[in-house]
View 1: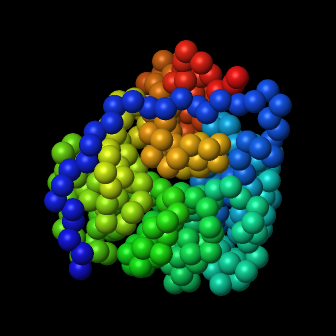
View 2: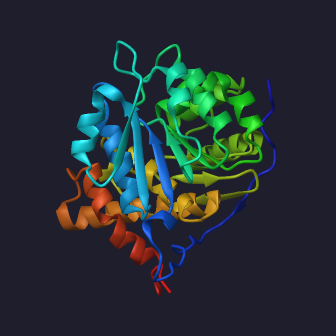
Length: 305
């Protein structure tokens, strides 16, 4: 059992702008995002993560998903590439074989977890991705659920590589429980403390999702101010995962990318609430508003020079 850090983080209030782009930039220089996601019945999570990455400005996005849903993902988002992974009889990634088929040299950043499902082989698969890939990794949803029992040792091995975890409160509780920690208080102060404690112990950046999303490292934290209650619908976190990965792929450090991503994600939802109505807009609508939100967040300059 480890002990949470007793000291609090330094609060940060600003968000960085989108990094500037050279006019001669081409897609191969705008970041390559590999998204490992999806399973039978949860292909939409992979699609939404891809849309978040594409709308966030990633040059190339490749969705690695179980081969059975590859045609669905490819048809749903033609701007993303797809790669079919071996699958088990239930339509989930067949972990040991999938590790051997992935191209570890292609991505700038890997995002893993949306719609992945849970199976006996998946904890070791998620752990293997974190161990094998030498660059930044974003872990969300079932990536976190599968990782939780192994997280302490696996994340310790990645202390020198950027890792961003994007749990909702339930996933955060499972991560804490795996370390032998008690549940955190659910008020704003408790959420801030919980995210910071875990980030400090695991040497990661934590995005603890919810009202007033918290972004925390071992030393600093940011509390988001954008977003609205219309975001309480499925798929929102998948879009955020792709957006975070896209910003990291374009050169932002983990804490900066996480802050800008949660701010822009919430701002895009605020635009959706105004343009479409406060209730009933969808996660894909939020993805569509991300470019405008990025431009607004980066004023007085957008990310070009």
